[in-house]
Image (cartoon, rainbow, N blue to C red; front, top):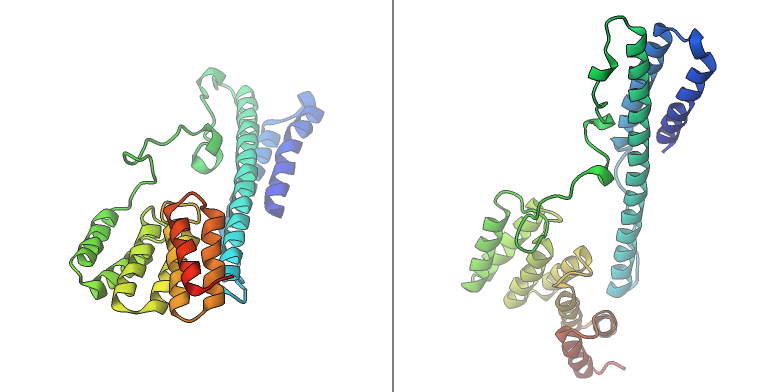
Length: 274
């Protein structure tokens, strides 16, 4: 952050310095300013390096509290990412303009240099700012994110195992899928189906973890209502009635018009939830 602010200040100060020099500015002066800018840009690049192991504290006395903590952390990280993206785009755009100005003045001072042949200054970082990029072409018929190579085939292999009643293989294949393609467009569904495979094996605790992974990975996705409902059911099956009742109530609160909300009401009644 400090480096980005330093670079921005440097870039903004460059034209002021040049204006003060006026006609006394030399070729060496411009070259020096240009070199300093490129060095600062390279230093800014170091901001992309991590400073250590990430530390994310997810606390809570119940599954629902931990679920809310995960969702809050995801929202915080998303907001921070958008803030950084805006600042980087601003530095990139302004820095590119300043360097272009220096290159123009440098050409004016060099004999035999034709300013009309300079062309556009390459954008810092080698790519255009996010707001200047054209919208990507749809990756599939649903306009969703593009699948990685082999992702669809691996997912279908796990689906086939589940459909054939080979629940152990299905659970293992879906687990491998989520590890190989973390955060992919099929990730939430893969976690959910992994939970169903564990349910069929009678491994309720593992099923509950899978349903929680499915929901927390995409709290507003197509599988979120059913994943949250199945999580509540699993908690009830594990004897954690209070957590189950809270989780099932959350299904109705978050997704009141879904089929899962009706199922959750029935499940709460069966558990004797207040």
